[in-house]
Image (cartoon, rainbow, N blue to C red; front, side, top):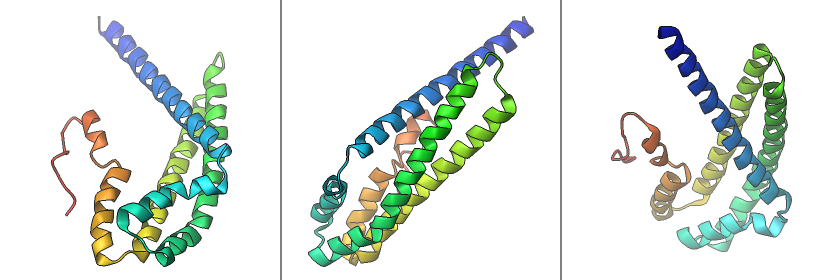
Length: 167
């Protein structure tokens, strides 16, 4: 009975990992298809939204766009690397006998790339914060909470933290 439960648990874990990989690949595919058809004018739409939400003047708006140029290029490079590493992971998982060491290296690399993406997001948010007045920064704090999806992960947590607000 114990052996059956252990096998069943391994099966469930493998299914969860494969489901997570599939979802991640789908999300990246959507992001890459959206960004590959993107022209420079569309990139500014998110900043246009911020301009309106935070009542940014033209000087602030231009500063954010200038500060974010390198950030946006880095973001695109990281997305391309993520995509290629996910394809390698999928290829390895598709083998008759997948190499666990290769899988571990790829998942580690993918994890580092996710960290790099999050850093680019943080850099973007800090660029916005640099040009904001005190009043705009309070509005921005509320937007940060939404952008960083602070409470969205709570539905998956064992302990709920959605009632905790940033101070």
